[in-house]
Length: 249
Image (cartoon, rainbow, N blue to C red; front, side, top):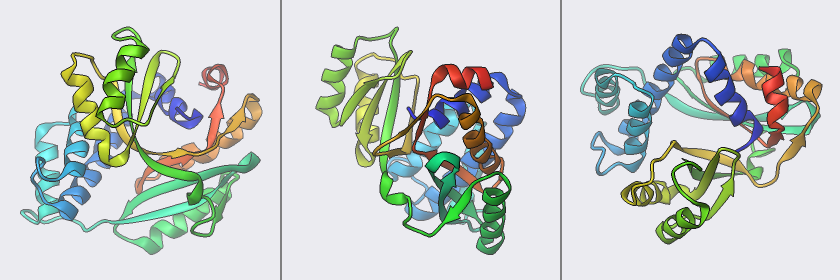
């Protein structure tokens, strides 16, 4: 798992849980709505929607919120039309950032994202400048307490996984984006409890960061972007040492 993802987890554990939960619900609602608009409101026939709905359930998002988001997406109830816009740029020390947004006003969001990059010490780049360094992948995290690496590998690879990595307290199973649900289902059906799963963007190469001052400068840009209501995800090609993240938290 990249350093910024570990930072996100640490912040959630140590930060204001209620505020973080409200922001998470709002982001998930947008993602559910967009998935329903693109592929229909049936979770069985729309794998993207199925993934988003499951993420909502795993986050304890109220059932009514999920159902309203689906209905807004399918047009059963009135809602705002969101457009997916991605931005690319850099944090200090050459760290590449890929930012996914859902917006109802691309001009406003573009200007505000540019301002965030500038004010927090980063720089916005042209489309294509960093996206080539990232690939869309599925990830499934499994606690080391519930299985062995060999058992998990046999199940996951047979179901279509690409790789398994040691991520400290967990094993992280990496899959093609299209195989995430198949791999997740196979692991669950084998009686192995899943800690989390997601569709993400993984960097092909990472920048190792072990200096706390450098990490602080990088995370300042990431935190500022993630605080924007239209920003859904921020991906970075850095790997910040776990002990450095703990010290900054």
